[in-house]
Image (cartoon, rainbow, N blue to C red; front, side, top):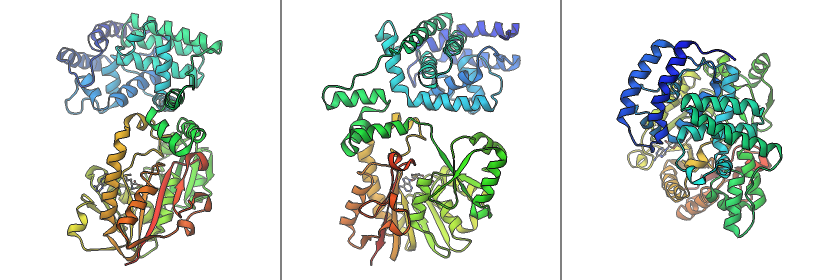
Amino acid sequence: MLHLPSIQACSVTEKKHKHKDSWSKSPKVGESNSRTATYKKGYVHQERKTQNVNLEISPHRAVSAVRLMRIEFGGAFADLLNEKGKGSGDNEMGYVERTLGFCTRDLDDRDLRLVTDIVGGTIRWRKYLDYLILSLIHDPSSFSRMEPLLLQILRIGFYEIVKLEVPSYAVVDENVQLAKVSLRPGAGNMVNGILRKLVLLKETNSLPSPQVEGDDRAQARALATLHSHPVWMVRRWIKYLGREEAIKLMIWNNSDPRFSLRANRGKDFTRSELASRLETLKVPYELSPHLDDFIRISTGMQSIIQDGLLKEGLCSVQDESAGLVVSVVDPQPGETIIDCCAAPGGKTLFMAACLEGRGMVTALDINNGRLRILKETAKLQQLDNVIATVHTDLRTFPEDNSVTYDKVLLDAPCSGLGVLSKRADLRWNRKSEDMEELKSLQDELLDAASMLVKPGGVLVYSTCSIDPEENEERVAAFLLRHQEYSIDSAERYISPEFLTEQGYYFSSPVKNSLDGAFAARLIRCS
Ligand SMILES: C[S@@+](CC[C@H](N)C(=O)[O-])C[C@H]1O[C@@H](n2cnc3c(N)ncnc32)[C@H](O)[C@@H]1O
């Protein structure tokens, strides 16, 4: 083990007092503490000068703990640190230093991969991990009062032991150290006791497990804990998919996300050129069987980023399920297309690349920041000659605009219930009450988008949701309100495995091993 330089040991002692003040009080999210703020300002300043790098604690665990705090508390994390000031924590290492009281060495590729695995997994498994922690602590009532940082350290340790199967001695040792140094020795002792208990239960195959029994509600609650999802989602999926499919869906959501890349035709970069670059980088890949420009990868994203493929605009990260929505639109050279909820631009850019320099995609969005990203990417990918942007609210846009388009894509704001494997925290942020609000927004947006279609033109309504209330039900309600529209089956544009009985496109995570997505192709008759 490496020895701490004396200057660091000194800083650590100093920090112990600081964290007694800040974290051990379990400040509530949003609560501020001016005493901590004053102290921290001086402390951070002093630390920066002394380069307080702690070499004893694995950097990936320290960074993971802080990233988990940021994700769980969102903007309120800055409040916890009392950092409302400009630029206070825009650099992750700055956050690490302010939260833990020490710096880590720079992360290498392996560390970055471990941070991604630990953070993603710990968030996904949060409900299950908390169930285990709660079952193992002496006084269960202390769980709700537990210091936020201590809880994150325990969750990391539990996740590593139960799901990652990292050798237990390393997990116990390192997380105990992290708790000791970033909080106080007593916190380290607590982590030691509880992690050792967990290791023993794991080794004897006697981990506590919620029993799936009782009435429907009780069973949904147990399944929600076992597969770490909110109860309302489990109940909804059991209702729409049945219990077995709901379980398969949760297993998919908890699995490592798979990614695909789209070679950018806008820069004359072909899929085979992309494949050669991946071979050079030794990144394993598979050609998409559904889309000519797409390649699947399961690892190697870090190498791809470092190689500059994304920065040079030669390819984009895009799920095939999103690419298939563009197939349903079927953009052709010379057409005018409006993408009504366009930012950050995944589908706009793919549609623009299909135009081969002739025609125009108008990218409209209410969010100017996201629209700016779209514009920059369009330039990078050399597609800005066929993309125009409009910053406005779609709901009022048709009032002042008489232009109509050959094709209109409405990729509506939705629950995102089809992309939970990639968006690890979304399941905890989404509430059942959101569904009603989203449905009425989707109806309003569909009405507005429908006014932008030329007679004989095409309207495509899409979501990244698997929920029938956001998909088929919205289209059915729209068709009742708009007799001038009828369904144009997507069968000519996608393979039969994605075609629903009603002629819509639907990708199912369980059936197709892609993100969940939906699209309906509608024709304006008059
Ligand atoms: C699902 S995202 C679109 C993703 C995008 N199509 C892509 O492939 O990258 C939904 C978008 O709708 C936008 N949005 C929400 N309400 C809107 C409104 N009233 N008018 C215009 N855009 C809106 C959001 O800002 C968000 O960028």
